[in-house]
Amino acid sequence: SAAEGADLTPWPAEFVERYRAAGYWRGEPLDALLRDSARQHATRTALVCGTRRWSYAELDARVDRIAAGLAQRGIAAGQRVVLQLPNIGEYVLMVFALFRLGAQPVFALPAHRRSEIGYFCAFSEAIALVIADRHGGFDYRALAREVRADAPTLAHIIVVGDAQEFTAFEAIDAEPVALPAPDAGALAFLQLSGGSTGRPKLIPRTHDDYFYSVRASADICGLTEQSVYLCALPAAHNFPMSSPGILGVLYAGGCVVLAPDASPDTAFALIARERVTITALVPPLAMVWMDAAASRTNGCHELASLQLLQVGGARLSDEAARRVGPLLGCRLQQVFGMAEGLVNYTRFDDGEALVVGTQGRAISPDDEVRIVDDEDRDVPEGTAGHLITRGPYTIRGYFRAAVHNARAFTHDGFYRTGDIVRKLPGGYLVVEGRDKDQINRGGDKVAAEEVENHLLAHPAVLDAAVVAMPDAYLGERSCAFIVPRGEAPRATEIARFMRERGLAQYKLPDRIEFVAQFPKTGVGKIDKGALRLAVSEKLAAHA
Ligand code: J2J
Image (cartoon, rainbow, N blue to C red; front, side):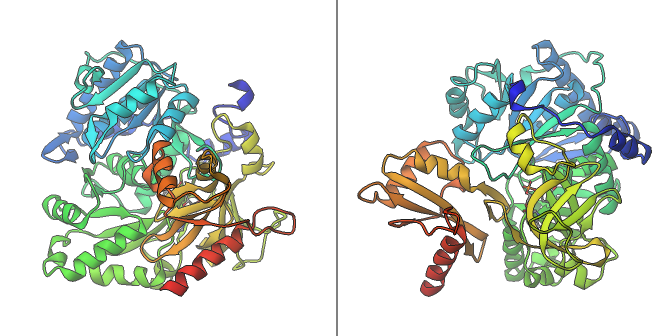
């Protein structure tokens, strides 16, 4: 694996010194966040899941026992554990237990299937996989059985619920033992990249860098021990985890309420019951909530406690942004972030024009945010260009991806975000588009090449190109253009084949177009711009 590149690309020494001197990196592992809050807020409610509630003291004590239980089974510091859980209390317990142990969670999503989970387990050389028995009509134990066959390092499969032949989550329990504190400069966990390549890239975040982004985010969002956060998005996603999300709320001594899903029926009832003050959504869900609130006579009443709605993950239209306040009776905060690091927020003292029309500005005075042209030269303020960035919580390289890193980072360590952005006075950013080969399906990122590779595995597919097409609800959906080998297969046959490949549902093409050949650019590459135009014109003609 050494040939594939480093697990963690370190920041150069001068940056390490600067970030420490500025007080960003404090040498504290992430589990200290829970330990400290347990000291300060022992009896306050930290976590709510359905009818179950944990105080800070209870949560901290349970985490100690789970960490000891994991250690007893031979799961140790520096080992990877693929974590795939829905929004349930055990997710939070397991995350902190792994942090405390110095073991490294790989944050998979409940939507992932055999293709993704198998890859995460094999590529990260995971020693354990943690799943729920069933969720959303899907049996994760069946998935684990399939994955195990191709993941030689996988020694433990831990199941919340009915474990069948696997290890029950409740069995991971032992008298607390003294564990050496993990090195705060070390890899704390692997987050997933939205990516644009054939295989999802893994993002190595350190305790130091992530802890800083969480503290600063909690501060920017005004979190206190009075804050009640509804986690309605999948908890493992970087946004509800850290911006300021679950970790930020637990740092501030507030209360995290886990929602099993983000539907208005579920979420509004929880907001009313727990007096939720802040939550985070992707734009399509924000629109569903606004529609629901508008059509419910008691909608506003249920949301009375809600002070702040954060929206991010994909571009929120100005029109939708303007309706948040009137319809939901709370403030809007736009969040433009990425699991690789950089997070931008609109601020509380920003005027309407900034909150509605921009995606905010960076967290840190030491975030270096540059907008450049195709030759990496800075463009004038207000001009659209490529966003590149480095800073105290932005990675310098992906996990074991030397070849890709050479393209994804400049020689002096700026991360190429792939976003096309304008920078306004004060550092406010407006996301104008993207130059990465990705579809942003309402916040769910789909790497075109990953889907194309699966399509190319079908014997009747000669060539494939996946592009974004406009969609009123999700912003974008995916369209696969296929050049058939001989007679075109039926679209339903392609869909069946793709499902069998074990891909997450959101990556399956929303539309398939068969063509005799692809339009080419001057240099002979597939002209994806022309394909995007072709499908959007076709959709417009039928609208
Ligand atoms: C336009 N595009 C956006 C926005 C992200 C907080 C919030 C979001 C993420 C996230 C995150 C956008 N408007 N407001 O990690 O901590 C697109 C950009 C970006 C990519 C990153 C967080 N907010 N995007 O979405 O790693 O293209 O992180 O580069 O999933 O989402 O995706 P992801």
